[in-house]
Image (cartoon, rainbow over all chains, first blue to last red):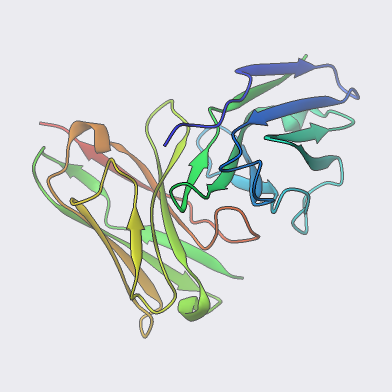
Length: 111
Length: 116
């Protein structure tokens, strides 16, 4: 299974908004709203920040939001804060294989 | 508090076997599909396997198919990942989780190192 494509890095200043894209195909993101986004700090387990495309788990800041257009899902972090500096991964269900595929990962840097 | 705790990791030689456990506390695994994900050093997560709620069906990534077996004991609230014929490329932190794309719980991970 091929990984979903994410930009290697995205950066922004505190208070700014950034958007991370996750590009797949009509077999995964394009066909299903089953996309999640994970935040991972060094040495820690991945943590859900968005699930089922647009839903936010309880306890996750409303500054995190998810969307989808065609074969691309996006994660937007508004009002960027220093604690948002981490690696972010998308994950989607793939109808071709009935399995799951992760994105290549994006390192977010707060300038 | 609902949580998953993985155990059973360690250092093994290529070709050897290892069994990982994932125990749930604070909730019952009975109704959940369960997944394993691994993450090699410096790399992103890779989905490995999943098992349905009653343990009658499981699926695997191509990289582990035929070598890894996922099972569960709902009476013990535990899921097991039996890993055989381990290779250096299986070296990773292994996580169990109740979901990949819907709201769920992930464990903190267990380290597996395959090296001679």
